[in-house]
Amino acid sequence: IECRYSAMPSTNTSPRSKSGSSPEKEKDGASQSMSPAMACLAILIAFTMGRSLQTGFNMGNEASHVEKTLESMLKSNFRSSPSSKERHFENLERIQRILTSNQTWAPYARVEHVNGTTMQNIPGSELIDVTRNHPNIEDYGKQHRSHAKATESSRNLKDDQDQKEEESKSDKNEKPLNIMFFYADDWTMNVLGALNKDVMTPNIDAMAERGMLFTRNCVTTSVCWISRSTMVTSTYAAVHKHLTVAGEQLFNKTTPWLETLYPLLKSNGYYTGLIGKWHAPSPKEFTANAFDYKKGYFGKHWFPRENGKVRHVTDLNGEHALDFLKRRPKDKLFALTVAFYATHALDNDFPPFQPMNESMGLYQNMTIQPPKTATEDHWKRMPWFFTERNVARGRRRRRFDPENFQDQIKNLYRMATEVDAVIGAVIEELKAQRVYNNTMLIFTTDNGVFRGEHGLAEKWYPFEESVRVPLVIEDPRMPKSFVGTRNDEFTLSVDLAPTILAAAGIPAPKRMQGRDIAQLYLDHKKAMSTWRQDFFYEWVQGNPYNADGHGPYFQIPAVFALIRKDYKYFYWPQVKYEQLFHIEKDPYEEYDIWNSTAQTTKQALDLMKARYNFMKSWAQSGNPV
Image (cartoon, rainbow, N blue to C red; front, side, top):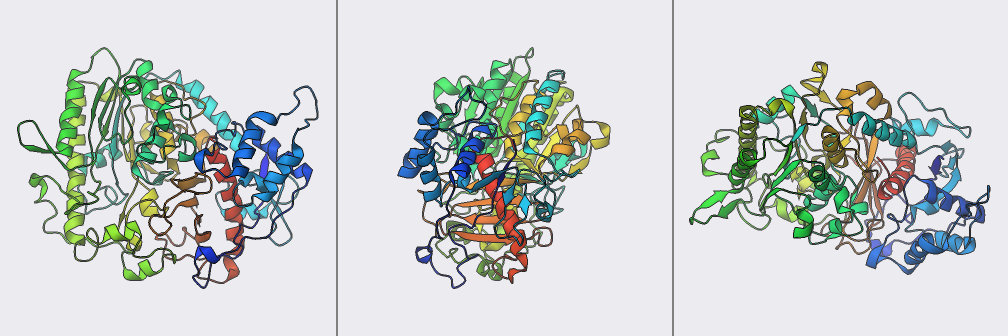
């Protein structure tokens, strides 16, 4: 079934508060009516989107009475008749009342039609199919009431599920590989020698020359613990719900722990190891199911040791990685994750980046050019609710303000070079043990980070510097024609677990939302016919669907986004504020075209909102992306 969504106006029908008014002064739009037939279709969509929406409706303590009522009805009272050819539903009037009375929450209230969506704010009320994935946003507006034929470059989300099942079947015929996963912290695309001549990372660069560099790799949430849980579970934050550091959602009914990456590897005969940053609770009864070897530590750049001396965190990472490789059983396949703490800053210390003493001579005589958007003018272009109270703004002051930029960016680069040196030592050990040619090597990071861009430090927000991160894969299965090349497709943090499991010959559980990245070089033509053209992004710590309960908007505001190669749409739910960037023409995201130009961009915004509404619902409900 093809579900199509309408671009109904949000509660603030104006594109922004042009006067800069606060959110308290915004007024909700008028209520939209919904016929019983439409409500019936909305529920039918909910039960046929390929995955139970109970995950998506699990609101928790922050849920309103209306949301809890709908959740209860979906889980218990609301049933379709299994015997009738024409389905009939109970409690239709109650469902209709709930859907029509709560505009601010349910994206499913926007479902108007099956096999056709009316865009109310496009001239002529053209029908568009937002389930299909087009390379250009304008392509959506070219569809008409008749069922539009998919173009060669578009695809239906149902195809993703078929593709995933095909990949799972083909994986069984592959010889399992060892897994060497280098997982860095707060690392941007520019902190890589292959992309920035100022940075010295010769070993990672060599991995790219022997493998593939993915230049449009992104995270679905740009903050450490959420992104790491997304990596382990291959699910969005709204699904795994590990939204606070101390939360134990990975180990309860929200997430079947034994169906996540590390328990699957261990239960299938791999000798597994984790070194460094975990950033989640570690109940022994659960971690015992995941790791044979675990050395967990992070949060400092220097650690005191038993002999009274201190050791650098990256030095310890290297020591423990080599220890794992030397101690591992030689008759078993292994999977080792080295989760570096570098290049993460010390949040409440100065200097924020503290490399090893031996590295201080590096970069000494260089002058590093500040980022293009690291200016006061670009800071002033940020939305009105970004003030000096914003945490990312505050943390910039002693890191990347003009007085400290040169010293701190050099220290950051030094720490990156130290990580690269450890990677080089590990690769040499793999070669010495003669397992290098049977090992998949992956280098990536949990999220990006601002280094002064837009007047900010840290991450959280869906600008390029925060969400776009390096990914290098060196794979002995890679055809020679792909070795040393770069790939510009959207690969995501949810893809890491399925990719590793496929290399291990282990089928990915159906609840995993990502896909096997290796298909981009193992079966390129087929993969490209169904590969994603955009993705949904989320940063929220309260209610994952509407951000209720998130912290103050003036500190670290919640944000959702639809990210494409041509446009990016941001929605800041706490202040009901929208932004639109024509990323194809504005790669540095300098110009919010919705809030700075005439209405010539209205059609692009409407189309982006329609696609965003669908992708948000689809991803947060646990469907394959």
